[in-house]
Image (spheres, rainbow, N blue to C red):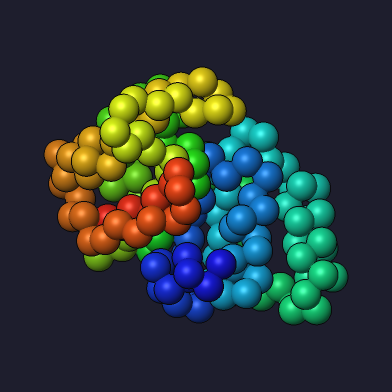
Length: 167
């Protein structure tokens, strides 16, 4: 968690949006320990009870008070300082269209952070959904083509990496 925060370096007054967040456990845990002004969660699977349960679980477990505002599934992406996509980039059917929406929602100078399992020497498939995983260079090239600047890559573990891009 600290490693991801040091990679993302969001501020207390930032608005963070997470796309494809599932039930938002990562996001809630991160923003509990490193608060932001606002956290917007976007995923058809998440509802208010799920997020409330996550917040209750982590605050009870840690004793830390929740400070971040939360919004679920707004009608459109709002201006954000950071946009996160955790282990979901390979699942989007129309990534080019998603990138356009992300760029439009990202504040000037804002960042997008992708956490993604990747192919390394041969094309792999995601164990959960069976979709093909990208090579790191493919993701970087896709984002560069859309006009985003690759800032950094960091190995998360033996199968996943973090990629950071700036508008």
